[in-house]
Amino acid sequence: MTETSTQTSRPLLVAVIGAGGRMGSEAVRAVEEADGMTLVGAYGSGDDLGDLGGADVAIELTVPDASPGNVAHCVERGVHVVVGTTGWDAERLEALRGRLADAPPSRSGSGVGVLVAPNFAIGALLMMSFAAKAAPFFESVEVIELHHPAKVDAPSGTAARTAAMIGAARSEAGCAPVPDATTHDPDGARGARVDGVNVHSVRLRGLTAHQEVLLGNAGEMLTLRHDSFDRSSFMPGVLAAVRAVADHPGVTVGLEHYLGIA
Ligand SMILES: NC(=O)C1=CN([C@@H]2O[C@H](COP(=O)(O)OP(=O)(O)OC[C@H]3O[C@@H](n4cnc5c(N)ncnc54)[C@H](OP(=O)(O)O)[C@@H]3O)[C@@H](O)[C@H]2O)C=CC1
Ligand SMILES: O=C(O)C1=N[C@H](C(=O)O)C[C@H](O)C1
Image (cartoon, rainbow, N blue to C red; front, side, top):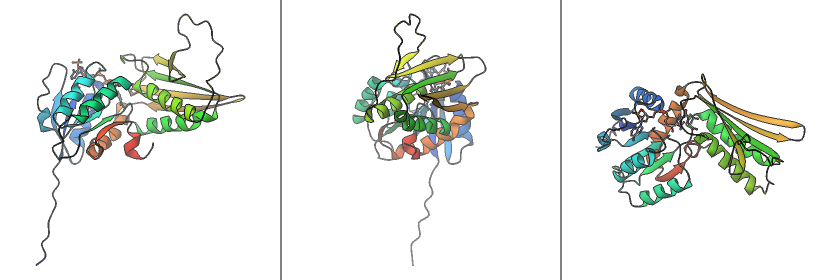
């Protein structure tokens, strides 16, 4: 007699940290409606994260000051984390890598995975990737990010990441610095300078999350633009990240690495 085994996979247990926020509340809804996922915890500021309801994966959508502490709490308990919160600069990422090296394994026995995703929208990931690809072919490049006025951080995480990707692509290609004759700018009208790229932040009632990358050569301009009109645009990426994070132990920056866009 041949023995047959029916493999019944249990649902993925998911907690949301920052559950009362604009993104967190959307993520709670998305997890509740997703096939193969069960919401086991929803936490706001002041809540004790405890054992995160026994979650396999936590989604972290809070504020830059709280995010590293929340992620550390998860990692120390072997819980994989999908982080959408901004503010993860090189120093914070380095500290997180150190923390992961000392972390216990996840419940399934694999190393804990943390995805730090500046943007979950598929179109935004493609826009960033196209910008990095195009940047070495143009003399000038500037980033303009436009968001709702309740956003607390500037420049946006997406813009910072885009500038970093553009800066890396240009330096790898041996590009000269972008031309700019400005010597007098007492009010910072030329924007922030991130990895050699000028980044401009607009905060405007009515907007959600938008970004343009302007690339210029003599006599021509290429404009790459992405618009998130609604936070539902982030949810397919959030769910894809939750499903994949356990397969990527260690720290990954950018959902594009899970989706084959990088
Ligand atoms: N990666 C992506 O694609 C996206 C990322 N984001 C980023 O996600 C983050 C959240 O954005 P958004 O939802 O608009 O912000 P909100 O201000 O709407 O929500 C933040 C939430 O975090 C809660 N919070 C604050 N501190 C803690 C803490 N220590 N523990 C648990 N919860 C806490 C707040 O609760 P309370 O109000 O009680 O303080 C609030 O409910 C931002 O960094 C934003 O840039 C946003 C959109 C897309
Ligand atoms: O705060 C927001 O709204 C957003 N934050 C992220 C960022 O800072 O890039 C992602 C998206 O732009 C929306």
